Length: 241
Image (cartoon, rainbow, N blue to C red):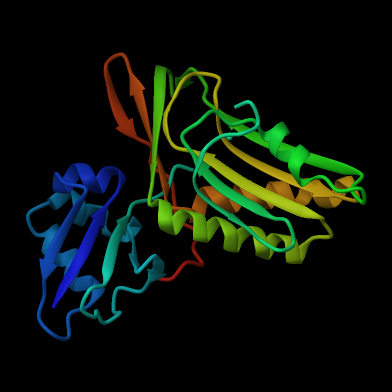
């Protein structure tokens, strides 16, 4: 059987490609795919315990059996929209008014907040992560974000809906920027509209914490003397951990 394989972040550097097609025998598992590429790439094998796998845009265990036409993705640890109208490369809205989006345009969380607000809301919290000019003593020139976009937007939506169910809020938005970002630009925004401020603060904090450990988006930092993928950590509750 034949499967499609996708590589992101550091794994893309280790394998020297962004995607591949692999022929496997019946009974092959997700682990079989990992072993195939880790053989000639010792750095990939060294990272095995921190890399998660996805099958058809869902986190999956290594023992999962494969089917013809499956899409398998290698997910290294995650790093963890303008005039108010960015072009969303991927977006989802729910009937309740929650919004989730990915864009390559500049982000403005305040503009997103104004779209979430309803007459019943008494507050909104807008958390924005921005690009700083240094990392561990090295001067940062710019950042570049890439993501497994089709899966990332689904995970963002799941997180947002779960948070909304757990807190007394009105609506929530999780939005993330991709591509090259300059110093001072917003990379991610978590916006919560709510009748009361406490619930909005709690939901926003949970939103950014979960986004940084469960959404397949990776960050590469560029310095005057080189560049490096930023290593983070997956949430321990995810399948395959």
